[in-house]
Image 1 (cartoon, rainbow, N blue to C red):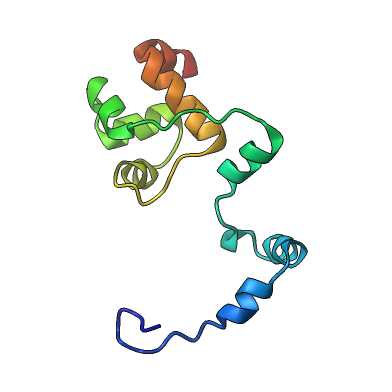
Image 2: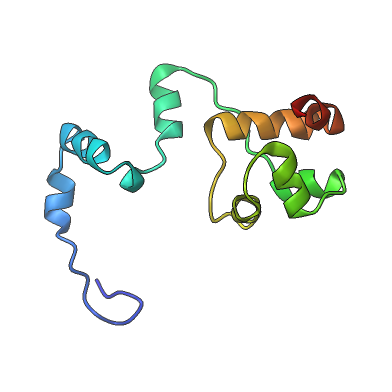
Length: 114
């Protein structure tokens, strides 16, 4: 399969397909930065409820905040807020729960954080 630059892919897809769950778990322990976002799969397996998706940009605009001000209020970096808004990253876990609360309660939630 060609890549964007027209070179053939070097991925050994047969090897990838043959990788067991235990091998994947061992690789994640060795290098956590390569782990896929498994929040949905874990929630489905454990029965744990996952907070709904939040339109971060709409929430921020409704509060009248810049990306920097919003980031400062919730304790994250401006770049992360931009990544959420541009769908380059997806909030998960505690960040997603916090965003749901901020979306629903607005300034009351932001003031409670201080």
